[in-house]
Image (tube, rainbow, N blue to C red; front, side):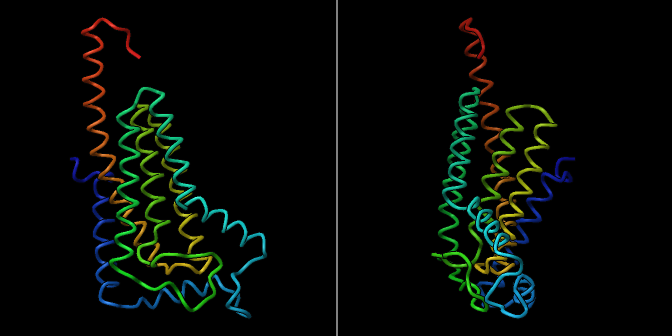
Amino acid sequence: MFLLQPRFLLPVAAAFGFLGLAIFVAFGRDFALDTTLVMLFRDAADPSLPIGPAWVREMMRDLTALGSFVGLGIATVIAALTLSLCGHRPLAIGLVVNVLAATGTSTLLKLAFGRERPGIVEHAALTFTASFPSGHAFLSAVVLLGIAGFVGIASRRADIARVCLWTAWLLIIAIGVSRIYLGVHWPSDVLGGWCLGVAWSGLAIFLIGRFAARTEAKMAQLTAARGEPAI
């Protein structure tokens, strides 16, 4: 039964998870675990410094850059161009529209909640917006899971879909952890971003995938009716 499949249950559970976190944040509740987890990534002798040598801090900055507007924007453009050149223009357009809509939603949510960034440690990266939900966590999930899902649909191969999905998840987790390590987000911000991103991408892949399948089927029928070779 479709309703019991993980691809349905996971986005639904994620949506409820985000809703629960959002209610707590909206009412100004604090999560005791937030402070504990943030301090785990800090030097006990000097909490202003993240744990590990300098190269680890630099690596975390590089990872966090992958979830920036520039990093995710480049990934979106490359994926959309590739899908379009491979004859999957509806998926390419759907990917771009999906990412733009999610970006706007992220900005609106940050303005609505207006949660302050962590102030218990020095930030190791620049920040310009509110804290909840983490835009890096949310948008990395939307973009990377979206790309993985659309590539899986386009390729029609389970092995390719699995490789893309696991790669996406590894990057999503790394980007989210880097935000906590750098002290610019509470763990609940990142968890909220992940939950919203999983729910959003699950719905987007389902809706856009169905739309693209119908569109490409109609295009194939028109091509066959005209006697033109299929691309």
